[in-house]
Length: 445
Ligand code: PA5
Image (cartoon, rainbow, N blue to C red; front, side, top):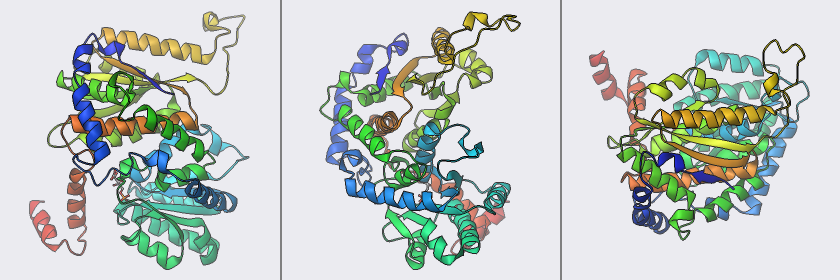
C-alpha cells in the first residue's frame, strides 16, 4: 500500500490550513460520487477498478496471448491518454535492457502515433522490416492525426509483410463503440476490437483496454494491476476520513501550496523506470487543471540524473516550486558495492553497501537540501515496483486529480485547449472542411 507524507511541506504551509480543506474535499468527493460536478459525463474511471469483470480480463489476456504467440514486436499506436498509461506501467515493470537481449520472453513493445517525426517513423518501419510484428491501434476519437498517420503506414507494412489474413489476426483496435475512422476500419477489416467507454476520458483510461491490453501483451499481470487499483479505490473512498485518505490529503496540500505561490509541482523519482509514470502524471494533471488561466504547472525530473542539471535550479532558482517524490521502498534485485584493495576511486567507504542504500541517502540528502533551499517536499512511498503498487499509485493520482480539479473549481475532465493547434494544423494542411480557416491563416503568414 502506498503512503503519503506531507511533513516537509509544513514549514511552508500549516497543517491547520491543509485540514481546513476537509469540508471542500468532502463536497468534491460527493460531487464525484453523485455526478453533480463539472464534467460529470466523464466519471467512468471512478469505480472502474472494482467493476472490471473476470470475463473482461480473460478476453484481454486471450487477445494478448494471440499477439504474444504471433509477434516478435508489437507497436502500440496512440498518443496522450491513449498511450502514456500503458507505457508508464510497461517501462516501470520491464527489464531496462530487455529489448537488447537475444533471448526474449515476449514481443518487444514499441510505440508510434505519439509524434509526427518522419525520421522516427522511417526508422521504426525499417526496424520492423524483417520482424513478425503486430499493431494495437488505440484512439478513442478514432480520428487523431498522429495516430491515424502512423497506423496507415503500419497497417500497410503489416499486410505487405505478413499477408492480409495474418494482419487481421495481429492488428487489434481499441476505440469507440460506434464512431470514428478507427472503428470503421476495425469493423471493415474484421479486427478484434475493444471498446473505450464513453464516460472515460483519455488520461483516465489506463485501466480500460487502452492500458490493459498493451500491458498484458508485454507480459505483465493485469489482474494484479487492477487489484492494486481496486484496493486504492477503497483507501481513497468517499467515506474514508480526511486524515486517512491519501487522495484527499494530496489534493488539499497541493491546492494550499498553490494558494501560497507554489505554482509548479515537480514530480521526482529516484528510479529511472518511473520516467513514464511522470509523463503520464504530467498529462493527467496538466490537462485536467490547466485551464481558465489557472492550474499548477506539472513538471518532472529523474534523480539523481537531473540533480546534475536541474538540481541547481531547484536548489536556488525562483521559489515558486514544490516537489512530490515517489520513493520505491524495495528494489527487485540486489547489488552490493565491491571492495577494492587499491581504493583508487576512494569508494571503499561504500564497500558492502547495496546500491540502493546509496540511492536512499541521495534521496534523503536531496530532500533536506531542497527543503532548506525553500522547496516544500511531499513523499509518496510505494513498497516496490510491481503490478499491485503501480495499480494503486495510478488510481491514487486519478482520484486525487478529480478532487483537486474540483477544489480549483475547474472542469477536470475536459481539454478544450488542445483543439487550438489542431485547427491551425488542419488549416495549414488544407484539410477538406477547413477552407475558411486555411484562407484566414494564410493571410496571417
Ligand atoms: O486525455 C485525452 O483526452 C487526450 O490526451 C487523448 O487521449 C489524446 O488526444 C488521444 O486522443 P484519441 O484517443 O482520441 O486518439
